[in-house]
Amino acid sequence: MSTPAVRDFSTTARTPSPSRGRPFIALVAIVGTQLMLLLDATVVNVALPGIGTHLGFSPTGMSWVLNVYTLAFGGLLLLGSRIGDLIGRRRALVWGVGAFTVASVAGGVANDSTTLLIARGLQGAAAALAAPSTLALIATSFSEGTERNRALSVFSAISGAGSAIGLTVGGMLTDWGSWRWVFFVNVPVGIAVVLLAPRYIKETERHPGGRFDIAGALTGTLGMASLVYAFIRVGESHWTDPRALTTFAVAAALLVSFLINETRVERPLVVLRLFLNRNRALAYGIMLLVPAGMFGVFYFSTQYLQTYLHYSPLRTGFAFLPLAGPLFAAARIAPRALARYGAKRVAATGGLLNVGGTVWLATLTASDGYAGGILGPLILIGVGVGFTMMPLNTFILSGVEPKEAGSASGLLQTMQQVGGSLGLSILVTVFGTVSRHSHKEPFIDGATAAFTAAAVFTGLSVALVLALRSPKAPVLRR
Image (cartoon, rainbow, N blue to C red; front, side, top):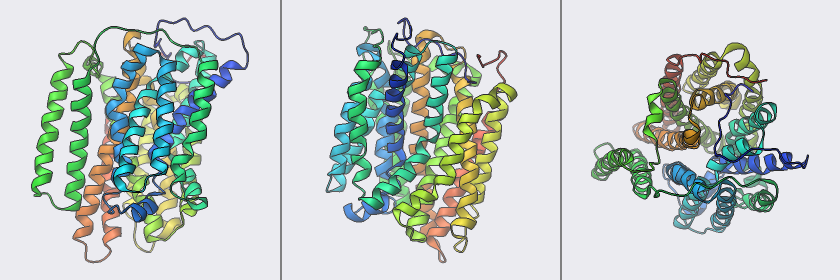
């Protein structure tokens, strides 16, 4: 696999279990957790029209069903990583998955918008506790070299394709049952992980000491939530809306307070010195920008297919297979491409395909339909994302000190969640502003404007990729 040698996430010895079947079952539990958490960020997408109708969400307000989850997930993820250090990675994963399962049941039985949003926030918080332990447990459960590389290859492929798979699964569940099943489907998976993990995954060493950065978690999460709310408020009203302007100011104050806090506390959520490495800082920026564009692509493509073309949820889900299939295949091919061409070239190729797909979507017209306006872009974006994400791991994890490896990987996931949430809120703002002033096709005009903004995000990500410096040492171990 063409990722760098993953450094220790704990000081625990990583001796493979004497049971031959145990590593496979451990990987199933770890990857199952990762897939469940990633699916939940997009599986709800296809169910949104049904949720909006049944619970009374506005077209722009529906984005909160996605954003509440990703904000809680991204905002609390680094705090969840610190809790994992304290109580053990396996225990953090089990507790997080258990809480996630309970919150999923609450979301599935919700009968009003407030209850659903609270459940989504609890899902995100639980995911923030479980997610940081997935990659760390791979590092401690599989010996360095071929065994770990294979496990990481499976993990990366599932991570890359998870969001796209969620769209297909969401369509199947919504059409065959109801929107509530996109939440209930997590229950059997969660129960299986809670039962398997304690038996087949070895616990990591605990690292007690120091205080939790509660101030950082609160200012960071509330700051991002305020920023997202302000953008969505503008999308529903206008740029001079007093409430939106006030919330922008509150968001700025909270985020500045967060940065100041992180420079002063003993154990910060964000280790700011990680950004001193030029390649790593650029890679984090790319990890922020790519989901910023992709979440919008998923959201508005779903709305176009169901609201404008009147696709059923099942048909909508299958309409995203041309994205999921190429994405998964590209993620599996990426390790070999990395070994031959290097991380920068592979990431740049993927980024250019992302740009091509989003620019193509920005030309969508009322008469294009699925085959003429959506199919081709989804294929390009699927391959592009598959080739983009894995190479970035090499730049982020390369050269990280063992004691900071958990922080580096946790920050990677945070960038993805925060980028997706913030990007979607900006695209919703663009959509709302343009559609309000359109006199011909409000939805099409708003959607193409949103896709154009997504193309700007992907274009900026390519610019950052081109600024990366190729690693001096080979990144592949055979």
